[in-house]
Length: 312
Image 1 (cartoon, rainbow, N blue to C red):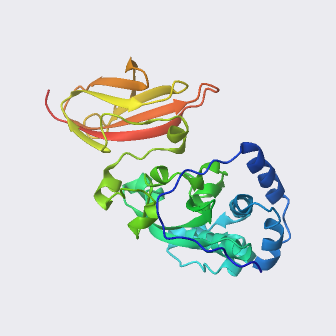
Image 2: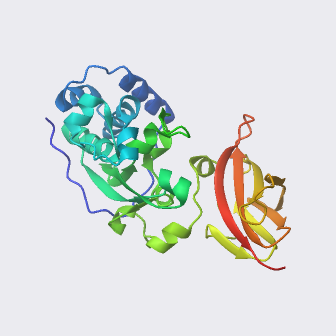
Image 3: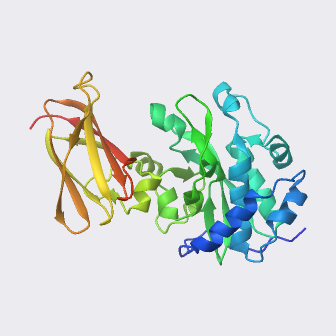
C-alpha cells in the first residue's frame, strides 16, 4: 500500500485547473473497473494513473457511479454503517459512507485526504428550510487542499423519494467560494477561504445552483436570500454574456392561488442583468431565476429569493 503524502494545514490556495480531455479519459477508465472485493484491490486499479489528480478523480468517479445513496436509511433515521469496506461490499451508503470510502481509497493510493463534517443546504433545506448534517472530503493535490463531495456528485433524492443517479463533475475540486454557498464545515478553516463565513451569513445567502456557477451568475444588489422591501423594487445579478435568463415570481402568502408570472430583464451595464418588480399587494413572494447557456431549451433553476413586500 502506498504511503499518503504529507500535507499542510487547511489554508486558501489557488484554484485547480483540470484539462477536460484527461478527466474524460480517467472517467471512462474508472467506469470499466468492476471487480472490487476489497479496498486494496480497488485501489490497485484506480491508482494506476501516475498523476495524483487523476488518481483522485478516478476514485471520485468510481464511487459516484457505483455506490448508491441509502434513501431508506435517510428517511427512517436508521444509522447506516459507514465503514469503508461495508459500503464497498453493499455498494450503498449515506454521506458518511461515501466520504469515508473516498478517504480510504485515497490513502490506499498514496494520497492524503480527510473527512469533513458540518451542515449543508440539502434535501431538508429545499423542503422545509432546515440545514442537514453532512460529510464530505478534502484531498491534498498540487500543493493545496481540494474540496470534494462524492455524495452530491453521484446524484440526488428525487420527488418520489428515490435515489436518482446523475453524475456531477462540479463536486470534484470545487472552488471553495462555491462550496461555501451550500456547505458549512464544523471547523471554519475547512472553508479554505481567506475570510470564512459565519453561520448566519451562510444561512442567509441565496442558494446558488451548479448551473448558475457555470454561467457566472451571482447576486449583485441583494446578498441575502430573504428580502424585505417595498412592493416596487429592482434586483440585479451578475451574469455572463452567454447566459439566457428567465425569472418568475409567485405569491406564497399574498397570492396563494395565482400561478407564477414571468418577469423580464434589462441590462443597465455589461455583465449585469436587472429585474424590476411591482408586486400587487403586501405579502410573501418567491422569485426564482432560471438560466441556460443558449444551447438548449432547458432552463435550470439558478437561484431564488423570498421577498417580503410591505408598502410602496
